[in-house]
Length: 206
Ligand SMILES: Nc1ncnc2c1ncn2[C@@H]1O[C@H](COP(=O)(O)OP(=O)(O)OP(=O)(O)O)[C@@H](O)[C@H]1O
Image (cartoon, rainbow, N blue to C red):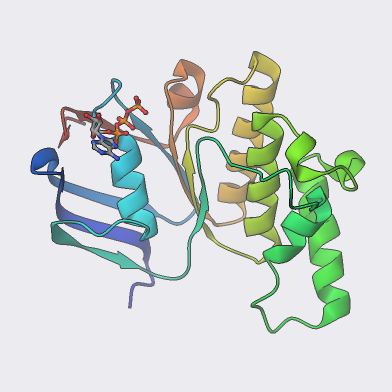
């Protein structure tokens, strides 16, 4: 069980239908830091983050995690037929916790505030923009007191203000001690990160 490092991955290999996309990647995520995962399209960034999160199994290699992970994906889908509000989605993060109900409600409201979605709490989740959905999922992780956040391209399709806001939120979570990694193509996010991991054609080059 890890304690000093949030996530430690060693020798990750992964193939899609016999086409190798990761060739022996090592990576550590430290508490209290934001790590940017950078590199060209198709380099294997999303695949790597999915393996770190445990939603994909590597062909070989190991991943150790100190605790559960909150994963925020590139384009959170929202079935229109499920009439969930933003607050419902954030509340779902607290379902499996042992926290008393009153405290859970306060955690949900605090998480909504922290991602600046309190004003939209009663909106249907399906009516949010892509960037707002990502923030709602971030709030879901915050509400369940996750301390490891993995984000796949939180800046994708967002305007400069939203990107700056997301960056600030991730930095704030890291300042609280969380380990944050995010796949990004955004130069400002890469510059602002504490650690940069760069993948090229499935290999770590930085
Ligand atoms: N479901 C899939 N089936 C087959 N090949 C896939 C699948 N998903 C991704 N790939 C391939 O695996 C490689 C790595 O993809 P991945 O999405 O991890 O790259 P990425 O670095 O995140 O790219 P981008 O910056 O475009 O999001 C690419 O060559 C991609 O075409």
